[in-house]
Image (cartoon, rainbow, N blue to C red; front, side, top):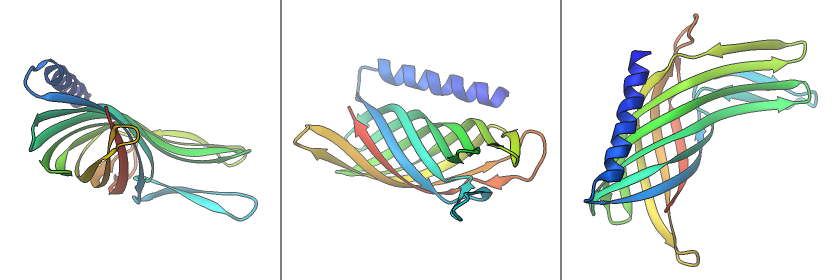
Length: 196
């Protein structure tokens, strides 16, 4: 628990520092992405024969944060978000959710950005609530990991709006709080980020 509080305090101090430093510029950002892969947690099967796997890395990832532009060649990104994967129907649902914080320095070469940094996932939970089948919540320990990411920044001139499209690899492990084996949450993902 001490590690998670220290990380949150450090992240907050960095954001406050970045926002208040006169040198440099800040771009606010909103990102949405899709992550693929990871270990299978469970499968939901429907009456029509179709099914969906819930995996440790898979799902939608939404972020809010900022890019602190140190100079033309270097930025530091900090963001917080929501990441989840779910499957449901009239009988109930299965889902795996977590709240990620990321701090990623990027090298900038024109429109290309290359980054590597740290990630921290907290409030992670795997749950199943399906009538006559399952009813449980598994809390996951807070987890540290690392990420590498490539982005291409571009302008849509019609709207005078900057965007960045990225591909990334996340390396992280999840451990249930009560018992169970550690699972890999590693995999690839894609991001579309609006910069304001």
